[in-house]
Image (tube, rainbow, N blue to C red; front, side):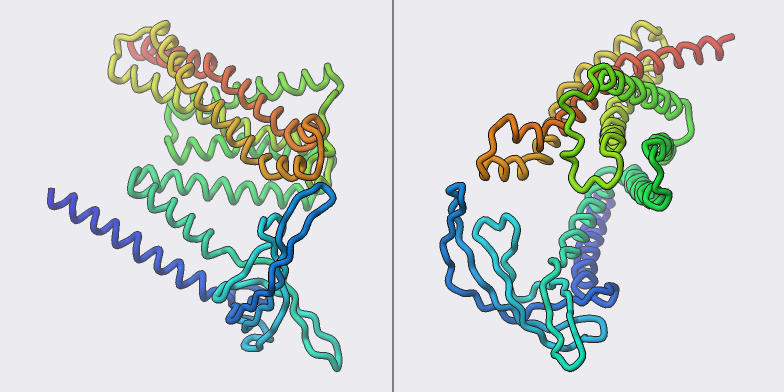
Length: 372
């Protein structure tokens, strides 16, 4: 009992020290940035003015005068004053307060004083704190498995950035295959790190790849048969490459995550059942896997819908507030996201029997092979 108490005290000290270190580092890391950063020391707010747009939306607009010192670069230590305008709704702006850090654009010319303009808000403090909180929770709850999960996320994140960089540098027409190969690497690395190289990870990999391929292939077939009718690929924000391939690459990555979640749960459950009850046969294991799949299918699909709502909520509200109809708003803000969610839902449905069959068949085959 005493050992457990000491362990939790050590965890608490680790969390507090790490949080304090991150806050200190993030508030003093201006030297790591090339773009000038100003720490606001004084804020003067003007009188709020009521505004009304052509659609009847009411708001309030306020002018701010910000004064602060530059923390990095050749203008370090210099004081600048600039103006900022914010609204009560904060739709496309932000109110600043004393002590906050902001990125600047500095303009200078011969014989004239250097002027400053607001570029962006420096948010790394909040980002570092959220990442640290996630790491601490994983470590406290999952211990070693939590560290494996963290390693998997970091490696996959780096791999994703490399794929995007490769896509940009090659600038080829058929870039979808870059992300298709990347999806295989994501799956293999995640399973290898979290589960290890064993029979369970190999069965899970086979289930994930088969379910993902079947769902995406079915979606592409339907798009081809319908000639992409109703698919507004031009609605993708800032699409600089072929929008359809960009949509398919995005759908593939989202599909892979949901299919991997379902397949991992089913395969791990079937393998655990076989370990605890070796007498179970193929039909019983297959039925158990399908039962697990049915129990998780509903929550997973609801998660997909909630993610879809989150991604489109703000933009849909903006469309509605500017006088657009429901059908027009749906077409240009929700249709592609809903199609991606449907593709992921199909993937979940297909991977349930696939993962159950592969796990049950492999365990049955292994048992016969060992007994032979």
